[in-house]
Each structure stands twice: as C-alpha cells, then as structure tokens.
Image (cartoon, rainbow, N blue to C red; front, side, top):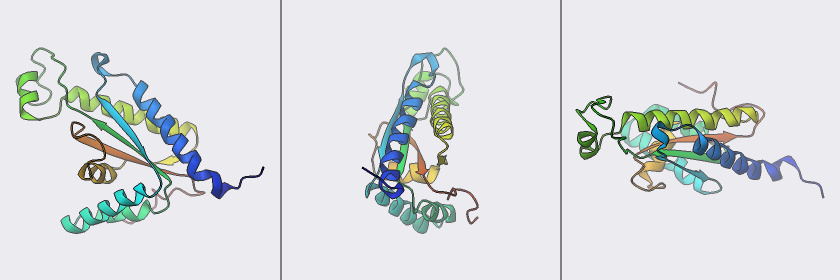
Length: 177
C-alpha cells in the first residue's frame, strides 16, 4: 500500500496534537495539583473555531483576530489547553491580588499558580511539537473563540489554542500586522 502526503498529513497532525496534550498533562504542576484540561480539534470543527475568530474580530474591531483567522486557513489540528482556577491554599500568598485564597476563589479570579502551571503546560506542548519539527504557535484568538463556543467545560475559564501546520512553510510567521 502506498499513501501520499495529502492522505496522512491530517491524521499525523491529530496524533501530534495528542502527543502535545500528553506533554501538557505530564508537565510539572504546583503542589502536584492538576487543573489543566486539553482537547484536540480536527476536521470541520476547526472551521467552526476559525469562523468564531473572524466573527469576534469583526464585531470587536480587533484586526489580529482576522489576521489569525487567515493564518489558520490550512491547519489540520488544534490543541486547546485550558486551566481552571483552583487556589492552592497557600497562606497569605497574595500573588492573585487578593488577601488570601478564599478571597481569590470567591472573586472568580485566577490563582496565580494555576496560570503559571498553564504556561508550563503550554511550553511542554509546543516543545514536543518542536521536537517533531512541526510548526505551531500559541494563540489567544483561538482560545478565546473556543471559550466563546464552550468547547471546554465552563470551569476552564482561561483557554489558549495551538494550531498545528504540516506545510513546507509555517503560516504563523510573516503574517500581516
């Protein structure tokens, strides 16, 4: 059996996104508390997110949403990574801007350490893609669109997206401003 590049690129992109999700899952977490959640998006569901990016950008007059919409035209998978705020109960930490974890939790703000954990998970995910020589870029615009579409459960209130491109040139660089 012979398979050609166009036949396996999409399938490989999904596998790569899954491997990236594993890297995010196994990344170190504060106090060993895992508040990270991921999902892999492929097929026509990618266009649902892309269309939401465009719609949001047009309605709010945010040009970089339109730019990101254009640069994701030929992607074949997206990894979504979200974090829920679950204050760690550290005594008088205050890094979130509140006096203590109870105030943070009742305000709906995000625990500083949960957000740091998300950053570490994102770094682990894109590092694994880099090891596989696959182009990615962490995008707020994708995460915002996915959050608006409620793709992840509501408790994951911060979401970022990582589009995956298997092309001879990365579409995520040399973009319009």
